Amino acid sequence: MTNSKNYSPEFHFPVENMGNRKKIKDRIRRIEEQKNLKKQQLNAIERILEFLYIEEYVKPIYRKTIKNNEEYLSMIERRVAYWLETRCSGSEKKNYGINAVLAVKRAKYKCEICKQKDIRCLEIDHIPEKVDNEGKKIRSGFEVKEFKCLCANHHKIKTVNKPSIPPYPLSSAYQ
Ligand SMILES: [Zn+2]
Image 1 (cartoon, helix red, strand yellow):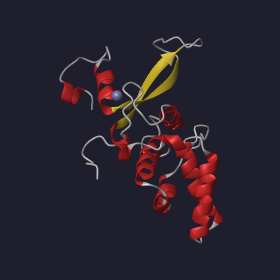
Image 2 (cartoon, helix red, strand yellow; image 1 turned 90 degrees about the horizontal axis):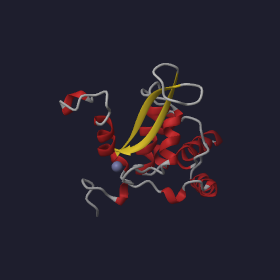
Image 3 (cartoon, protein in one colour; image 1 turned 180 degrees about the vertical axis):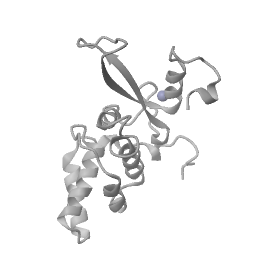
Image 4 (tube, helix red, strand yellow; image 1 turned 120 degrees about the vertical axis):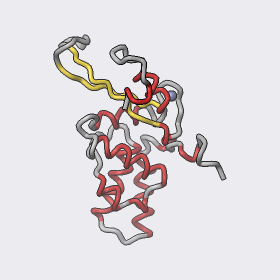
């Protein structure tokens, strides 16, 4: 048994299944064979799996949908689904949105700098920037949000390195 206090492969998202719609369909079929679920619920489970595994799936998922179907998800899938749900439809929707979820999927659930895969360490860095029509950064103009999937350490380092923020005190300046 692995020690869950350390980085552990048991907390890696199964990225080898990403993009595999057939695998999702097979899984739904197995659930259908074993449980007497309504079509509506099977569809909901399929949506959660597409939300997690299919990069092209660009719709948000809702807390209630995950809650009602927790038993059909693995521990990792549950954790990741709840984490991303808060960003795209829950309390953090305003600051993140579905593009944040797409960035995490694009990064294949790992830190874009050090490739750390333990999902307990992953965070979404959001950089609100003002750009002009040509995408050049300016002080006023359209606000676009760029997202990166980073581990907690690299997220912290990036935040601390922002030129607009004084380098100390570290503990309270970046909450
Ligand atoms: Zn990292």
